[in-house]
Structure formats: structure tokens, C-alpha cells
Amino acid sequence: MVVLSGVQDRLAPLQAWLFPQRVYLELQDTAITAMALDGRQLVWLERVPLPAGTCVAGHPMAPDALGDLLGDWLLERGFGGARVRAVLPSQATAVRLLQGDPALAADQRDLLQLPWAEDKPLDLIAQPLQDAPGRSLLVAAQSALLESWIEVFALAALPLDRLEAAPLCAAQAVDAELVLLVEAQGSTLLRCQAGVPQWQWPLPAAMPCESFVEALIPCLAYWPQLRSLQLVVAAGADLEPQALALELQQDLPVRVDVTDPLSSSWLLDGRPEPTAVSAALLWGLAAAELAP
View 1 (cartoon, rainbow, N blue to C red):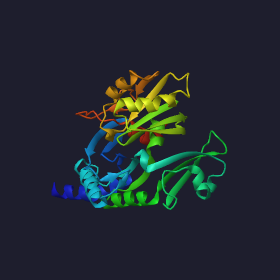
View 2: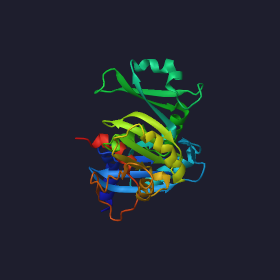
View 3: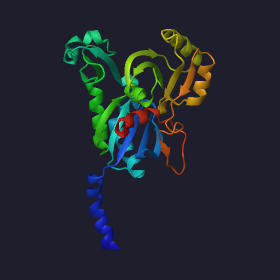
View 4: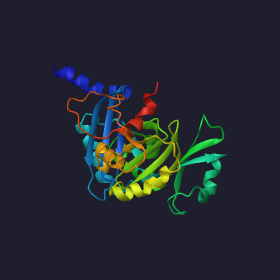
């Protein structure tokens, strides 16, 4: 039995290399949420709150502490060394739809109206849109923020495969013209087509609801024929999606539907003890990999 145990121990790194585990993480200033799947079956979904000031506008202020937290947390849950894909909060990235040569974006930064000072070094990643020749989707993020998260995952001994923008994940999570992404520090209204944000409008935090509705109604006036608004609530927003949808429904002229990959049967819940944690953004992060 001891010999067999030793063989298993030696095989473990090889198995991890041949069949790497995948974990999806939603990074918010107030919490980090983890999701693991077996095909389309949900096997792990958990949120861990973060002390105030640990992350600010998506920027890790304590990389060492975050690295220790993530490494220990995933190891305790049986996902030590898993490959990670993570979604950043909206305020950490900017998404723009470009017409023409995306290589010119860096030289025309002032036209992009990015939310950071001109002297901040940025990473600009443009992807041509197959269904729209001559157009591309640009994602911008501060270089220092990306480097800090790379450091966090290196400290956690977790291979980082991708950092994604929250608006992209929200758009990919649903098939809707208008998507409302609600996060702890603010909200974003997205006009989407085929899973690609075409236009976005920043909004205040969802609470108090009265001021939020006052800011949202003028946006909806651009689409008088709109029938429904799809609501995506980030797990770190500390809001109950259904309760928020009911409150918004009382004052908005459109139907408010909540994006929930579990209730919509997009994901099958295989957990022995399910917990009520929003998985909409994480589903959008994973959806591209799970597409047939």
C-alpha cells in the first residue's frame, strides 16, 4: 500500500500536466469568486470576501496577501496549481469599438476617451470582428494593473492563462440587445450584438435605487421599442439579483430579466451543497471555451 501511494504521488504532477484543472475567477474589489466545471456541470462555486482596501478599482494593493489567499484557498478546495482564467472588474478595463486599422489606436489615444491619465502606460489589445469587416474590438488596461495581477498569481503558484474585461463577459453571458452589468463600485449599460459590446454607458452604483433609476431611464429612451433589459449582477456586488430586479421593475418601462446560468439550465449544478452565489460573469468567461 505504501509503494502504491508513492507511485500515485509521483504520477500526480504528470496527471496535472496532462489533464490540467481549470478554475475561473471573478475579481472584484470586495470579493473574489471561484468556479470550476466538469463539462457543463458546476462542481465548485464559492465567494471569499476581501478586507477593505485589498483591491481598489481592480488594482491589487497587497499582492503578497492576495497571492497567499488565492494559493491556500484553491489548494484547500483541491484545485492547487489549477490553470486560471479571470475576469477583472469594469473599472479596471475600457472597451472600445474601432473602425479602421486598430494599429493606429495607440497613436490616437486621445480619441479613445480612456478613463486614465495620458501618462499612464497601457496595454491595448485589438481583435478584428469576423462579422464586421474593417471593425475591431479594443480592450485597454493599465500595464501596472496587469503586471500586479500576474505577480499575484505567480505568488499563488497558479498558471494564469487570461485576464478578461467584465463587459465582454457580461455580453457573452446572454443573448440580449441591452445588458445591465451591476458591480459594487458602479454599473454599466451595454448595447450588445452577437456577444460583442457595441456601446456602453457608465452608471452609478445600483443603491440607492432611486438615483440609479434616474440615471438609467434617459439611456433607455434611445430604444423606445425595447422589450426587456438583461441584468447581470457581479458576485462581489453584495446584491441579491432577484430582489434588485424586482425593485428596478417597479420604476422602469421595460421588463427586467436576471441572467442566471443555473436557472436557465446553461449549467447543471453538480454540487452536493449549493450556495446562492451569482455566476453570470463567470459563465460569460467560460462560455467561449464551452461553445460547440
